Image 1 (spheres, rainbow, N blue to C red):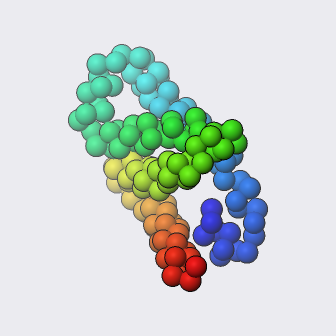
Image 2: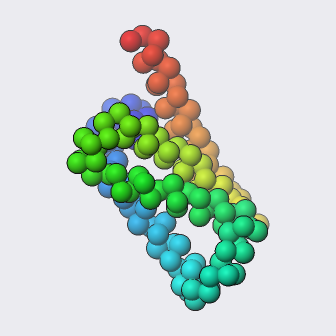
Amino acid sequence: MTPLKRLTNLTMWVSFRRMLGLFVFFYASLHLLTYIGIDYRFNWQPILDDVFKKKYIFIGFSAWLLLIPLAITSSQKMIKLLKNNWKRLHRLIYIIAIFGSLHYIWLSKTIFFKPLVYLVIILVLLALRIKIKKRNVNYG
């Protein structure tokens, strides 16, 4: 959200950060429940086989697992409790975003354009984020 804030000079992006993160966790959880409940009717063995044999399911499941601590620690109380460790923990979102893009790309069998657009957007925003960090470090 910080690169969007800097690009547009609008502070509203930062105010949506927590809600967007919780929505991502909610959507990913529904997505996973649909896969487990509708596709496999809670038959755990083929689900486990898929997780370990299909790379797009493995990376998607990994992204969901990494989202859990972020969702648990998203409250104001947890921010105060964890202090600087909260920021360190929430940097996992960068890895999670890339994992989500890879999940979508590897899931797509024929048309890669739309998932690649998402990956490019994520990579550009992450590159802007790195650039912002370097600028802050160099100039104090």
